[in-house]
Length: 262
Ligand SMILES: NC(=O)c1ccc[n+]([C@@H]2O[C@H](COP(=O)([O-])OP(=O)(O)OC[C@H]3O[C@@H](n4cnc5c(N)ncnc54)[C@H](OP(=O)(O)O)[C@@H]3O)[C@@H](O)[C@H]2O)c1
Image 1 (cartoon, rainbow, N blue to C red):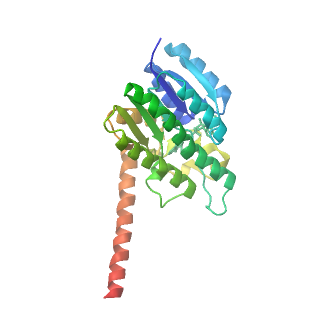
Image 2 (tube, helix red, strand yellow):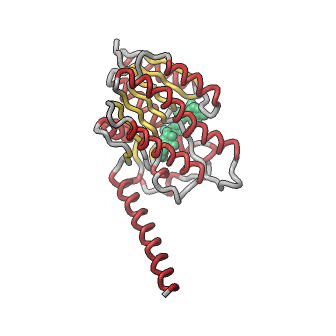
Image 3 (cartoon, rainbow, N blue to C red):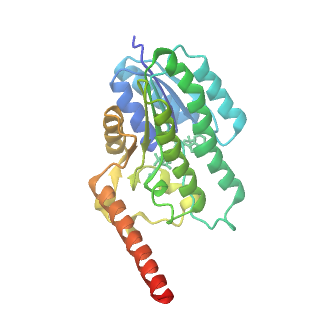
């Protein structure tokens, strides 16, 4: 039986499920966290049979602090944790002032508080053996914070800053921290009630990636020590272009301002 352990939040679908499948294939024992027990049970059973690993299911709603604490305690009780994937999340598309406040707070708890608490519980366990990997699933939105829903972009930006800052603190250890910033990815993300107005067909097909592709590329980049990572050439190109456009607008603003002063 394998000695390696990975805990994945949001493992019941999409990118989290793909991480679980890839890591099971690599021989990791898994702790699968999300709310939908049946989906987690089915995944755990499939992966256990297919790859002779152990897969435990931990049902938790990470928008509730008390339930985050249950996952935190599970981590603290482990002898070792090799990989933590803070992946659970959802999207919003509303105005900051008029959006559903409960959902906005849920998002802060899932993206920010849960990732923070679970990382805080994990790092001391990893330090005991001086190795490990934490993947924080952020988004390209965390790098393009002037576009999109304020709560989503802000909470995703937090995950990037947390990763960079924590990696810096751990630079003399063998613990790697990785912020994954996917673009458009096929999953259940765009099927939730929060994004019911979103129409996948409005985004060109070539900009979409599969969850499996995103998780595979992320793991490869993380193991090479990449701290902030955008999977997919077209995503990286569009990020660059968005920055160039932004730089152009700023430069034009400076030029106009200086013209007025002159
Ligand atoms: N898909 C994209 O285009 C895209 C792009 C950039 C970033 N991302 C990020 O990728 C991550 C994974 O999303 P995905 O695309 O794989 O979407 P997904 O298929 O909807 O998966 C989301 C996962 O998060 C879990 N989750 C949601 N609310 C939760 C809660 N309150 N407590 C515990 N778990 C919860 C869901 O499980 P349960 O419903 O069973 O709880 C599910 O397993 C998210 O953080 C998302 O922001 C996605």
